[in-house]
Figure (spheres, rainbow, N blue to C red):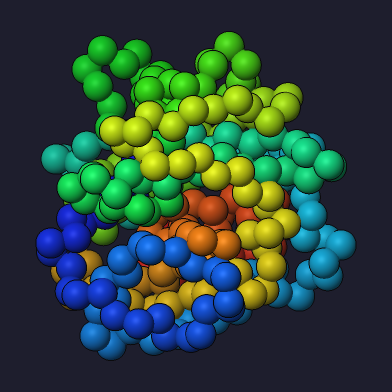
Amino acid sequence: MSDPTTPLGDWPEATDPLAPIPSGRGGPQRIPRPEGAALGGSPPWTALSRDLRRPSVDDVLGALRRRGEPSIVGDVALEARDSAVMCLLYEEDGEAHVVLTRRSPTMRHHAHEVAFPGGRKDPEDADLWATAVREAEEEVSLDASTIERVGSLDSFVTVGSRTLVTPFVAITDRRPNLQAAPAEVESVRHVSLSELLLDEVWREEIWPMRHFGRPRAITFFELEGDTVWGATGAMLRQLLAIATGTDDAIAGGPG
């Protein structure tokens, strides 16, 4: 699933990043940065040492349990469409890893963008968890019998498409054997949470949103060969803040 935001044709032309990207990081994603965008702040976990930025799966699960019930961020319009994504975690070398996908370059919207497996709810889906599972099966051939649902992050309404996205968190006991469906997914990425927590990977920008009414904080993670941003960046930001026990208030809500 692409980040379910405004179709690219409705955004301004792509512009250069507001801060230098470290050599080897960043990808081919088109970032339609609006006029008036400005650099934001440091990551919520900026005060943590490197040792505290290597969460295990158990660390994430414990933090999710302590957090309590997720909420809905933003106003849900009557015409809002339901969708779900799967944040799949597994442990390798004592560290939690997350599964991401890179969208096919042939897709009409959001080509090359990095996202969680997921998509819009179909009428035959029993519930939104069923949507997330079905989409993961279709996009990356995930074997649903090997995963366990353990929680969810906050649901939120995206900026442009008015889609209500519910991110489910699931775990599996080993690195999953996944295969990208070429029509939708160019590649599957396995990323450790410790990499996402590096200072040099993080960037926040504050974007004016005339159609939304107030500026929004847009979170970027500059991986080796890819840029994660938009809705997926916002969901990862929340997951990492929960995992590290750091307070975080995103200006204006998720991107």
